[in-house]
Amino acid sequence: MGAHILVVEDEEKLARFVELELLHEGYIVSKAANGREALEIALNGDFALILLDIMLPGLNGLEVLRRLQQEKPTPVILLTARDAVMDKVAGLDAGAVDYITKPFAIEELLARIRVALKLHGSSSGMAAQQPAEKEAGVYRWGRLLLSEKRHQVTYDGTDISLTNREFQMLKVLLENQDIVLSRDVLLNRVCGYDYVGETNVVDVYIRFLRAKIDEAFQIKMIQTVRGVGYVIKSGAPDMTAG
Ligand code: CA
Image (cartoon, rainbow, N blue to C red; front, side, top):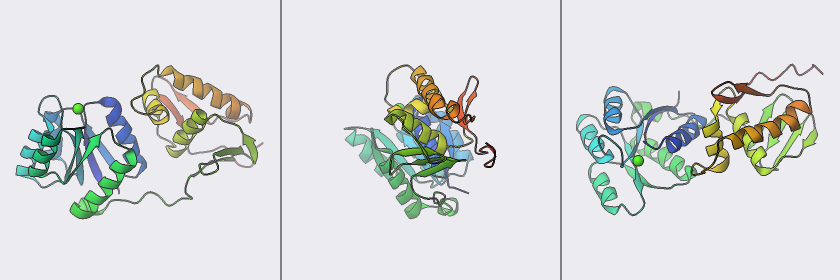
């Protein structure tokens, strides 16, 4: 079981982006979008770590932190705005174990989470799971192979030529097999969470991918979940079938 992390963030796109990354790392994730909800969930749950945005509706993050710390010692990493020096000082004074300034690189956040869990982990925090052992940057689905290092996709040994964004989208779908990804999430992952534009560009990339893979090799890899998004299910078709 991965460590259970509570993500408190009212910017929905950012919250979902972080959630997806954490899930991918093997953590269990809960979310709250305002201060009061966060405090209630935090007090009633058993979290290894809380990522807490400071600027929140309802009750701000510092207040959530203060009230939480009176009740239980869950480690908290604050998400702060750039230049909010007073918030950082007040946050650390109030008991936060670390803070990270927005916008942040996801790798940095993941690194700080690992450190916080190691240094401050409770029994549940110690259970932090390492990402599943696998060949780094290689994703498989039946006869399809995506190598991140070589930036190459093949089906049954045949090269498939993809644009960079098609490649990224395929990678995200392959690394999250069996998880239905919404257009928003796919857009965040492929274009960055601050991308401003139509989510239907996702449908366009999916169409290109289907033409180059599903149709070209007569398989059904990318599935549409109506009203939700897209998924690649882990059960690849029979390897021996034509
Ligand atoms: Ca906020």
